[in-house]
Image (tube, rainbow, N blue to C red):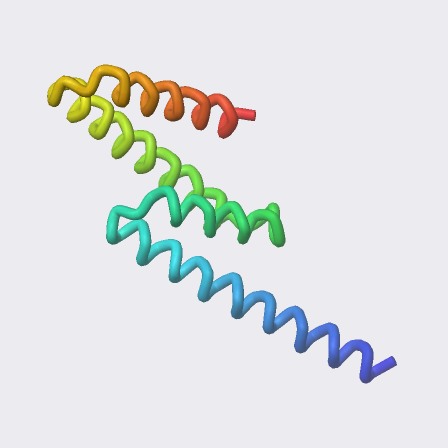
Amino acid sequence: MRLLSAVTLILLIGCLGGCMSAQKRAAKLMEGGDFHQAASIYSEILANNPNDPEARLGLRQARSGAIGQDLIHVRQLRLAGSREQSLELLLKVYQNVGAWDQ
């Protein structure tokens, strides 16, 4: 029984360490402006630990940053005369926001 408890404890510590390193990676990506990739990492963390408040906050911030970046890109495309590309990206942003709200 003690062996089982020790193994469980070791696995739990390993998982927590892995989550922390994943959160650090996501934070670094956010600092570098790679909001989509950071959001993916935060989503993975939350899949394993849905009650992680830091990951929840990070995911909200990453998604917000991704939306902002994409909308800037939509505007740049429109101003460059790439109307169809800008509309395609705007539709993608709209679909992402809809999926994230669920």
